[in-house]
Image 1: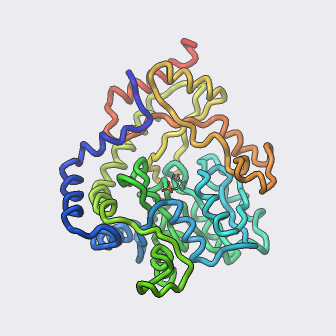
Image 2: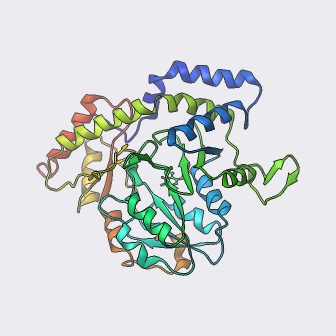
Image 3: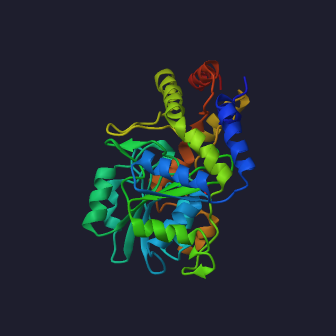
Length: 367
Ligand SMILES: Cc1ncc(COP(=O)(O)O)c(C=O)c1O
């Protein structure tokens, strides 16, 4: 049997008629960028997360970068960020001239709250928390620390649509919740898209200007902005998907439960779920000391897997100038050597899930 990590077409097929109707509606409307579909999506998504405002943008990276900029964070400022994140989180900080200060993760792959305070300096302006793989960070502690030190709190929710901590949605804790709607995400568009949610009216206004060349009124440019406008087609398709997000998450939970109950192999460490949070399983990430051999074994049995992520940002070639070295963040570096994401996608069949379980369980017996 051949199983890909994610087969996006299956979810399209599930709601095909609705997607096609939405796309045709936009194509026939004659209005394609920042229009009624974007406004309607922004309203629904803000409501879904439990915030007052949502600003639709081009991508998750733009959401993070423009949120950092709108908060006035720049050269000379430091931003605390988990060391084990996707490079985009860090790019958003350095794109504004600020310095990322890396902090090791806890056992749930999210910022270790106990290590944050040691990283705070007089230059620290914000904590950028990442709800990696679909599970919220320890938000009680993170919020307490941000408040105690007068720091901005930004949330990278690119992987956590619908994930909650103690009942509150990720994206509803900080000054700004930054989302990606890249097609593979749980709330994925059919191209690039992103958004920032916030309760801060002034911040939302600034973001609306920044996304449109820095102008509120055409040709009156108040800020040095960018073009990061969400288009009508993506917004209309996202409206369809948002209406089904509960089902999308429930299906991923079923697949994750089957993995958690079925995988029994002492060589494979299963992901842990926080007691006071729900996991939306953007990725199902296992760990094993002989990860590369395990990945090759799965590939030889037709199962495609991906490493999220093989090189931590502090060791990325582009950040050599930050002066970090191997050994600086051993927990993160160990994760990079041991993590592997198993197939997880909407429309994954029961027999495919069982095949993954059986193949993982047989690992070590037939190698
Ligand atoms: C944790 C994280 N942050 C940021 C991003 C950037 O989102 P986008 O690809 O929409 O720019 C991604 C997704 O790729 C991500 O996984």
